[in-house]
Length: 304
Image (cartoon, rainbow, N blue to C red; front, side, top):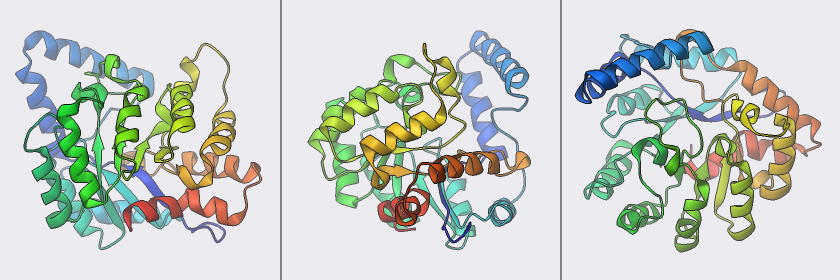
């Protein structure tokens, strides 16, 4: 809690040694040429950002959970939502349990797998997940594909939100043909009872999110990450401008705070928290409205 404002980070990840092993195995499966290109991309990523995309943390899940709790304490963050990256990421289940009520989680599934609805139900009912995360640009599917509707129907039956990563992303295997948020329009329209979250203000597709908001009321945005995508637009746009427009169109009731913190060795992204909190305070929000963005909205959607 910061100055009487509860803080729930609505977008975080964990990396473990199993996660990095899984990435390496997937890369090898695609052949030596792909592996060579992937390794080159990793080296470029390290040079550009002075950090790796992931980390190999071999500590037990209980230790990783305790370390993240310590980071949250240091930055005065009360609770956090951790998001899965692969359908088989079972270690996230144990990590959330080790958080002893301080964490909640969104699982992911392969949306094109006919058994995806069944897996989602098990994750939610038996393992306590409170939402679903899908990655169209890396899972290479169109959200409007009718073959995926049974998965949305299951999410609606479970009364859980769905988060779609759209727009640009750090992942090497991204295909931007699947990145346009406008693909969500039929889903938002056909499933008005399902709350849908698009993180990072749409990662470069902010205009498209604003257009969608004209038509539907079940679309949320999250603020997570450094939002470096603003640098790649053909016009000048400051992060403060993004917040002002989001507040105008979505209102404080449909904006969710997050940092996209994920590298434990680099710590919690306190700078992102302080920057975004400062922008929101300067916007003239009432205390109740600020509390919705920083904690209330994600609590309402997930029950954390």
